[in-house]
Amino acid sequence: MSGIIGSKLNIRGSSRVAKLGTDGQVLTSSGAGVAAAFEDAAGGGLDWQAIETGSTMTAVAGEGYWVDTSSNACTITLPSSASVGDTIVFADYARNWGTNGIELDSNGLNYQSRDDTFTVEYGTDGTALRIVYADATNGWIPTLDKAVADVPSKGDQEGIFGYGNLSGGQLSMTNLVSNTGVASADVTGVGTARRELAACEYGGDKGIFGYGTTGTHVSMTNLVSNAGVVATDVTGVGTIRRELAACEYGGDKGIFGFGTNDDSPYYQSMTNLVSNAGVVATDVTGVGTARMGSAACEYGDDKGIFGYGNDGGNLSITNLVSNAGVVATDTTGVGTARYDLAACSYGYDKGIFGYGNTGSIVSLTNLVSNAGVVATDTTGVGTARQLLAACEYGGDKGIFGYGWTGSYVSMTNLVSNAGVVATDTTGVGTGRRELAACSFN
Figure 1 (tube, helix red, strand yellow):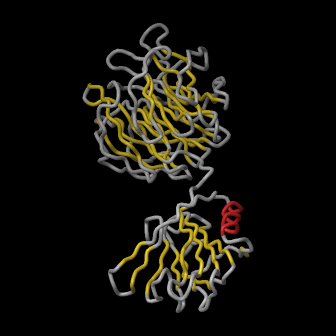
Figure 2 (cartoon, rainbow, N blue to C red):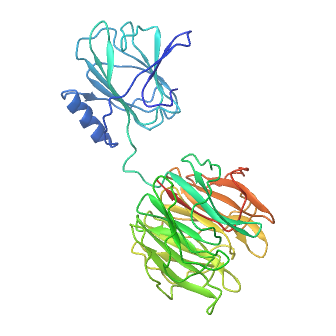
Figure 3 (spheres, helix red, strand yellow):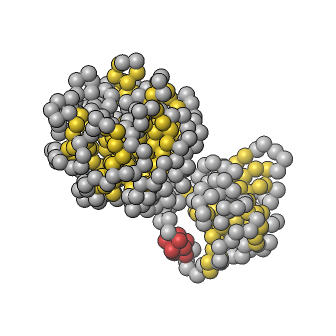
C-alpha cells in the first residue's frame, strides 16, 4: 500500500505508476466533524452507513462509509453507472489503512481519466476520501484525499536522549527517537557537556534538560523545541545538583526533584517547577525523603510520580505530584528498593519504572496505574543495567535506552502501550551512561 498522502494508481501487470495529489483541506478527526465537513462540501445530504468491516463492499452514490480495516484490507466496488455530481465518501475508521488499505474497483468507469484496468489503492492511516463523478472522460475524481490529523492528540510522538558519560568524560550528544521507537545517530555539540542530569516535557510538545555535573555541579538547562532542536545553555536555575529526576505534570508543565550537590545536606529533597514556557522556578524545599538516584514519570494524563533512590540505603518510596505540581509525602513499600533506574509514561495515562541497582544491577520493572499505584516487580525484561534513561514515544509507548552493565551500552528496549517491555535492540548511537531523556511532539 502507498505510504504517502494521496492514492496510487498501478496498471495491472505494469510498473507504470501515476500519483494523485491532495486538495490540502484540513478536517477534524472526530466522526461528527468529518461527516459534517464532507456533507458541507458535497452540498449536504450524504447518507452515512454503518461501519464497514468486510473484505469487500459495494458503494452507492450519495453515501458515506466508515471503513474499518483493523482485521483485513477491503476491496470496494464503485457503481457501474453514475451521473455528473454523484458523490461518495470513504473514511479510515480505525486509522489503519497504512497496514490494511482499500482498493477501489471503478467497475467499467474511469477513475481520474484512467480506465478500470488500473488498480486504485489508498494506503495512508487516517485518510479521508471524497470522490465525485465528473463525466465519461475523467470519471470519478477525488476532490478530497487527505490524511486527517489525529487530534486532539494524547502523548508525545518523538523523544530525545541527551548528554551522559563515556569513559570518564562528559558528553553533549543527543539521539532523537522517531514515532516508531527508532533511535537515530548521534548529534553532537548541543549545550555544555555533562552527566547525571534530568529531563522532562513542558508546553505540551517540548522538552527541557536540566542540572547535572560537568565535573562541577551546575544548574543550567537546555530547552528542546517541538522539532527536537536543543537550545543553548540557560544558567542559574535553582540549586546546583546532580543525580536528580524530572517529569511532566499538569499536561504542559514539568518538575525537577531531589538529587545531591555533594554538600551539606548531601541528599536533597527540593524541587523546581517548570512553566509551560520552559521557565524554571526557584527551589521548593522539604518534599519527601531527601535522596539521589531516583526516577520520575507522568501518570494519569496530568500528574507525576518520583520513585525509588538512595539516601545512604536503597529506597522503594514514591512521591506523587498533583496536577498543580504539589509533591505528596512518601508512600513506602512499592517494589524492590533500588537506585539509578529510569522511568517513562506509556498507554497515555500510565507509567513504568525500570532497571537500576539493588546492590546488584537488575532488569526488573514496576508498572504505575493511572491512579499512581505502583505494581509489584516484573523481572527479566531485557539486559540488566543501571544509569540509563527513558522517555515516551509514539503517543502511547515508551523506550528505555543506554546505561551501564559493567560496560557502556547503546541498547534500547521498547515499551508497548500495554506496558510490555521488549527484548534488546543494540547499536543505537554511542554507548554511555548517566544521561537523560524526554519526549517532544
